[in-house]
Figure 1: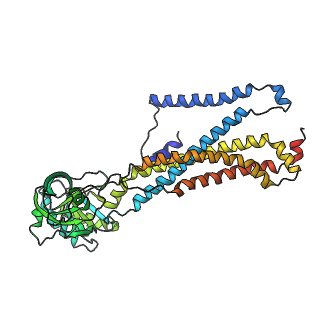
Figure 2: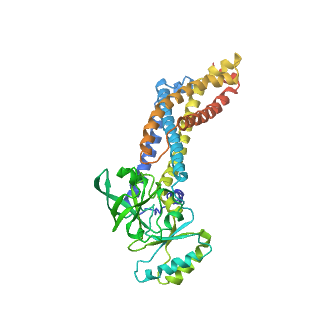
Figure 3: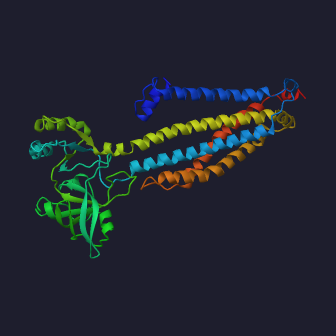
Length: 437
């Protein structure tokens, strides 16, 4: 426990104290101790059942029932190992898909600075924003209401619009932004135009919606459509291409952008992390009484899937453990079969059988067991992993190579394990294996 606890704390990024004062700790220790005793007592009882005279006469034979049980256990172990290897492949491919999928905007080196919740202090916001713009390290700024992918908190409001001649009221997500927000994040407008500081009416009448909102309303020509919501009333001036502003566990929801906010909460600045000290110094000039709270949007994106990454990492360790257990079981079965057929192998060697022939002779039975395990594991993997992938609105398709790769991996590992034991018996002098006869 002293050895594994720091490893688990680092792996799961949590702090697990040593629970010496907890009753559950002693219960777990008791369960482990009891299971260890039972595990040791079972083979002791089995061995004590054999007659010593029979063993001394070298007439000791492994029962077919015991061999069959070992085969069933080995198949079960390989089913579990195959499912877990395939699951690890699919899970890692899915998280890789998410991390490299286009978000629909550029979140790289975008600093999100949290503004103070003080109306008097916010009077200095225009001066602070202008100071940032004058910095050579800052490539652009935008003032509005913060959005965070990690906490999923997006303002919502009732939106009133017409669809096919009928008035509809729908609950929509809202972004309160300025004219610099869309170009700063490199979003793509697919229809209409961006907000403009030169257009005074945009601040009260302008709306930009995403493709999901257009689809929800059933608009064929969204530009100019009358719309009302979040203390704004006007018409749609632009349509932005769908972008992921929340986790990919969820589909992209309808979104409405309006110009300006009743109270700004964030300043977005395009800047390299190495230049953060300059921004902090500027902050302390204008807001000396408030802490400098910030985050980068790309870090915020990574935090969304931190639990997924942690779970997959833990699953990978269990997969490696299941492979090890399956290999140990296979090695034990190969040893048992080779021991039972030692004399047969000796006779075949005397009659001129080559090592590769002996290898095929012993390996074919194990290949059959692995084939049985594969037939069972394939549909089980498809059912489990399709259910797991269903938690993501955007996910990969399970291709055949993702299922066949673990089978080949298991087959290769098995051949190595079997070959070791078979070659070990095959190179033994046949005289030694036959002299007892």
